[in-house]
Image 1: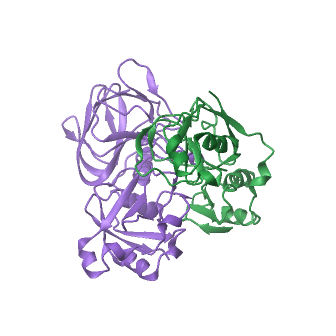
Image 2: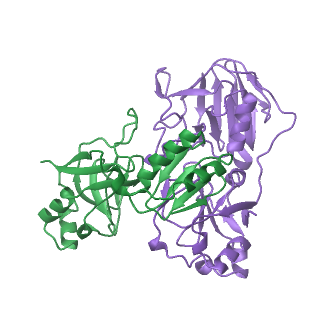
Image 3: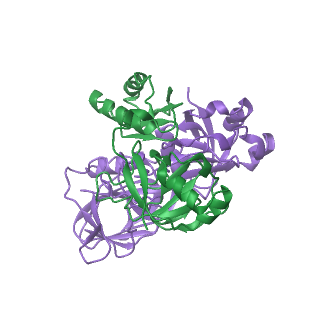
Length: 302
Length: 206
């Protein structure tokens, strides 16, 4: 068992809830899948084990001897008063404290506990009031699953380890690629050529409005001075006449105002805005880790 | 009907007749399982269907979908009995809908309750089903200003659809009534009362 002392911006995440999208249930799960997978691999867990996904401000206490692995964003992190190294197995004895404070780069750090999180108790009643829901412990901000958010005092049950944890000799940073490769989306043919050219020529800025549902991208003021102004940049699609289509992670939606929303873990299952392209899985991980105000650009995959 | 890549990890079938995607979903899902190819999710929308299969099985799924060259007709599944949903017609928008459609309230209720519905697809929230079959006389744009809170069990219409709100949420649809039916229950398998392709009838209760 571990106790959440300070929750910060932290949720429990696993591989999500595939198999229910046709009933309107988002897949959810870890935002940066590569860093999540690495954390579980090093912790000796199954690929879908539940971990803590945090943007910082997290403090936990081990209530028994456990082994943890931190991956993902570079964070100011401490075990007791010593630095907590990323991509290394770190044993904790009962009572030791881990703090993951501010992130230096990236948005999402992953703390895997050897064995994996198997349940969430709200307080010390020892009554698990959030066991897996539709096969997952992931907190989905769109549909409100798991209904009980983490809070200080929450207790996390830890399963017995299934294999031996291991460390890496080098730290694997999240890939922070700024050129995102995408393949053709279902509505690409609806965009006029000039719009498609502008789309790949422009710099797009990661908006602070981004979250686990989607990354919102706005026009760079710099690129707008060289290119057609935002109002005419990606228009040409008759928005009122599009039927809703199923959405996938990485789908690039163009909104009526000419902004872009890239679908992330908690994306809605269907949507009515045109989808110009689909970003590949690795580049979605990279985009998810880009902090607000970073400039990114698109390139069509060949 | 067209089969195209939707990124490396998914495939979209579009150009479907509305109402057929839910039925096609069942057949595609069964075919993927029979062929031993991965399909994490098979998701219908209004006139399209998406299979999420991962990069490795992309070619297998696309080959398999090409065999579904004849699109399923909604009539194929009329054998199954409709799910009946009891409705008390006490919705806050009945009078406004009647006025907007140049009908009496009784005529609105009669049109809504006698129609045969089918789940075209689910979306917006877990268990929220877009039902087609609403008589054209009741087709209305959404409310100009959405409500911040629509109670669970509200029976509503918007555009060519009717639906039932599975739980309290914001919403812009016109409220005709309420039901005591449970639309979403995670202790059930499946958790949604209404699934794509199913037939639905409303039954008036007082």
